[in-house]
Amino acid sequence: MEPALPAAAPLTQAQRDFFLERGYLKLQGCFTRAQAADATADVWTRLGMSATDRRTWTRERVHMPSHRTFDCATFAPRAWAAICELCGGEDRLDPASRQWRDSFIVNLGPPFPEQGEERDEEEGEERNGEPEPPHHRDLDNWHVDGDFFVHYLDSPEQALLVIPLFSDVLPRGGGATVLCPSALDAVARHLRAHPEGVSPRMATRAEGAEFARESSLAWYREVVRACTEGDGEGFVEATGRVGDVYLLHPLMVHSAGRNTRRAVRIITNPPVALREPFRFNRVDPAEHSLVERKTMMAATGPGDGIEALRGWKITMPRERLTPEPPELTLIVAATRSMGIGRRGGLPWTDLRKEMAYFARVTKRPAASDSARSAAAPPLNVVVMGRKTWDSIPPRFRPLRGRLNLVVSRSASTSSPPPEGPEGPVFVASLENALDYLTVPSDDHGISAHAPPSPRRVFVIGGAQIYAAALRLPGARRVLLTRVLEPEYECDVSFPLALADGGGSGWVRRSKEELDAWTGEAVPEGVQEEGETRYEFQMWEKTD
Image 1 (tube, rainbow, N blue to C red):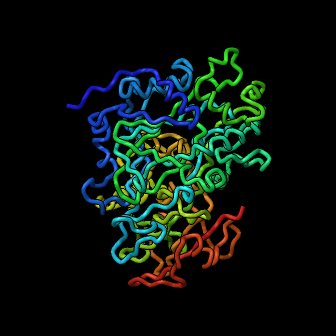
Image 2 (image 1 turned 120 degrees about the vertical axis):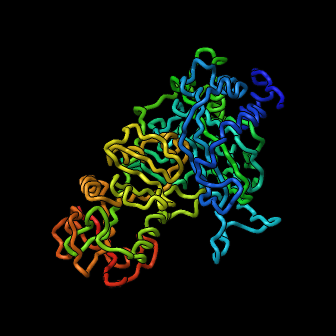
Image 3 (image 1 turned 135 degrees about the horizontal axis):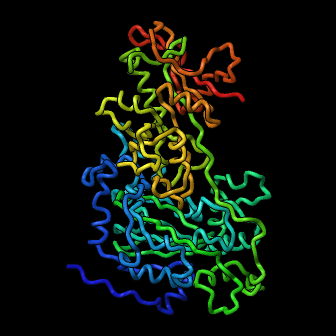
């Protein structure tokens, strides 16, 4: 039997002093292994992987949707007591902050290479049979949490970052979150200098009306490099045992670490928010919370002191950021007269090379201008109608390596969580499908605490779903397999005529542009499989 947990107690003076100096705390043994085992009991089922067969670990890092919640005050009372103390008391916290969810972030490490593939050289040097992880300074995922609001020095939306460990997390390549405490001052001073607010990526309003849409993490990478130049001890790995909980100042710059050991790492990021913004002008200075005191210390230089913030206030309204609707790519095979189906199925059969092209393109992540991310990109999305879903043989459902969204009139509009990272997720309309992808919610497997990564959204049929997609402004591209011969008899058509003569508001792109977008050298010219002759094309909207 595991020993009973110690009762919740106030932070020690040493802990308070450490938080004010370093901006984080590590609390050991806040919940038991038995509690963690119960909370994570169905993780492998939900992942669709085997705990004992690493060949099934096909994704490096997975943000899981939540299925249940538990009260932090009873699950981890020491952690909850510390959260309340750091933020100035439970009465200052949004009541929802007390609820933790099983929206686990599972880091499995890079998938094993397929047979015949070579190990990625970027994995680093070998260390006792394991690749040496890259230097922390070279991670490219550095950020501050909160991609759903415009940031101010006193923002209440992100009061604290909490990292409970639901597995042991090993040092040096165990996938631990990496902290850069020395960068906190730079973030705080940047926010102080911009009371008009900045984007989650620290872009200022002076950078244009679309400043809040800035996606580059370059600002953070530069700050981390500047703060740690010549300082090999400037980083902290959030390692520990099951039940340990890290509490981080909301402006703590951090990054996902590489799990080159391929040791299972399971954490969560329960959100903590305030009822009202932080205050730096309390009448009684003793009423300032530890988080407020740390912010004031970080935002002020040695020459002006914390009193300099008493007159600070925001100069623009607070804003929540709603992600832009995703760009939609329709992918379809159609005859010269745009026929796509007959009697509930495809008019043609055994186009294996064409189906392989479909699978490759819909699985492949978008190319990034930045260096390789420290985490695997999110799964691309395939959106289809219920009839298309039913037409897929059960052994191939859901389509592997992609999140499957199925539009069905009988589905609930509340978007229930998927069974695994590939779904399926049944939604009542195409609009509900897009809401599912854009609303920043842990319930959707899209962490509100992680920087966004590009994912491509493909509409794969049938005709009604294609028509609904074409009415949306996000429909910008059609990947068309033009079936040239024979002219198959069809009773269902694609709802857009694409002809080389133009005039439809769509233009056919070149072979080079098709290659660049798909990320492969697409076979050129007329392809033949059996009696069927076809050609791969890409069309884009011009207006």
